[in-house]
Image 1 (cartoon, rainbow, N blue to C red):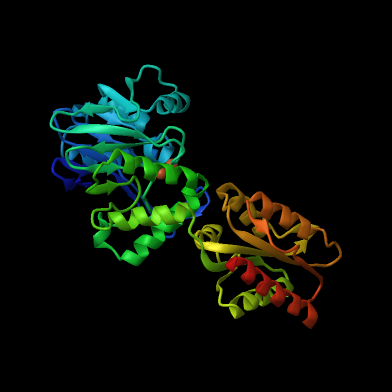
Image 2 (cartoon, rainbow, N blue to C red; image 1 turned 135 degrees about the vertical axis):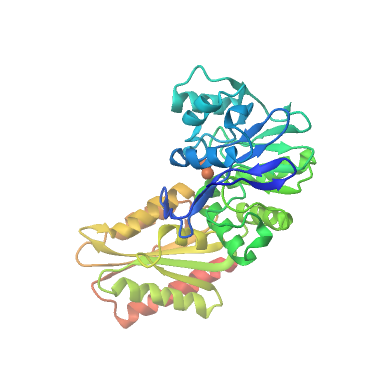
Length: 396
Ligand SMILES: [Fe+2]
Ligand SMILES: [Fe+2]
């Protein structure tokens, strides 16, 4: 039996917990995820967002714990991505809402996804409010956080910000609030989420934080669409979003590599040793043992990214290509980098890695080091020296 959970007066969590999810379009969700949906019991009973398609029945049962779903008047669609709107096709047919409230882009996206011209779309803009009876909801469009259609809903009287994908975490828990879980883990999962979902839109996060400050709204609760809600540590997560999106980078380097017969690993190790000798914090990450989303979580606050790969059939190793493709999409600009490579007969791969690093927005501070077969002592010394050189650039 699925129950509803009270969040605030007349405001309930009716979402779904995806305990066993381990992959979210390439992001490793080692702790699962949740899809938060909320119900406001007012004169106009209002559902904020829905869940993934196969969790529709779970959500409807949680709603039924409070009220017959058919009694819902409004559905607010803050984001049309399928983790929050996948259940809409089923839910709208059951509920038959009076209004389906969304941004203009939201309407466009729903028409594209569901082909339902008969739904009662009600388009809202930033600053527009809707009365539910005792409560008023004001909307803030947040394009590209995380899709063009995204928006926030702010419940004026209770100062609740329903923040869609922003401020969330992929973390399945029975707890609902930030102060009920370990704070370090919460911030780690929040950073991992930003690094792997929102990093390409960092400049928009900066704009959003300024816009919200300019609006002068007070927030007592942030209710994201994934993970824990923020009631105690709101200043901490706002500050972290500000720092992560500037980005504020540390004296830290990620050395990420894959290796065929250990030559590349030996070279990468010496780059790491060179960095460490100058006091740089190093994360040494072999692909395969570390996945792409763990690497990006460390890249979030790192000033340098060093990539290592052996050559396989005139190409970089597949895991390195995968990592670089993933990183390119997330655009970790503002960092510096370099690469190391061991090869058998074709030294051209180093150029390909450098090109990919530049496509990531990473500034190369060295042309990279390629070694035929097995590095000699002098090759390893060059790798160490490259680490020292990168360290000097980090501190510039
Ligand atoms: Fe999304
Ligand atoms: Fe989402």
